[in-house]
Image 1 (cartoon, rainbow, N blue to C red):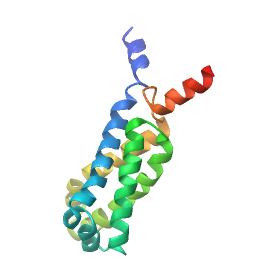
Image 2 (cartoon, rainbow, N blue to C red; image 1 turned 45 degrees about the horizontal axis):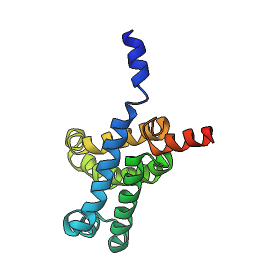
Image 3 (cartoon, helix red, strand yellow; image 1 turned 30 degrees about the vertical axis):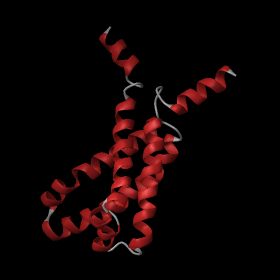
Image 4 (tube, rainbow, N blue to C red; image 1 turned 30 degrees about the horizontal axis):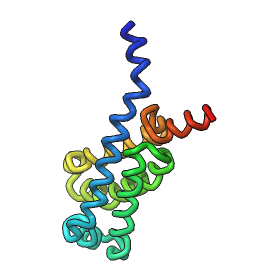
Amino acid sequence: MLLATLRLFAPRATIFIRLGVGLIFFLEGIKKFLFPAEWGVGRFAHIGIPYPGLMAPFVGVVEIVCGALILIGLLTRLAAVPLLIDISVAILSTKVPILLARGFWSMEAEARTDYAMLTGLLFVLFAGSGPWSVDARLVRAQDEG
């Protein structure tokens, strides 16, 4: 009985990962515009991202749009791809230098959120948006029509 219940709710539980990942990226994108010195152009310039005046707003828009798509569960797998590139660049540009300069444990402490987002995105990419999503609704409507 318990296993049947767990199996029944497993696909529906994807909503928790999807909402968490989508909301965090959505808010991170907004922060790049609200606080450009700390999270947008200023941060990109500080960490050495080329063309920070172009790249920070571009990344902000990608995070807002793809985060919103993941939040509502529309084109979820497709929306995860640019965010996987985004988080990979973030890890390579901010966490690898910490690893090289201060060692594994310093990097591990700094990278927890990035690794959680990376694994959340991988989950969404492979599992999809789940039954409580716009994607699932569109599939159901197509099957009925």
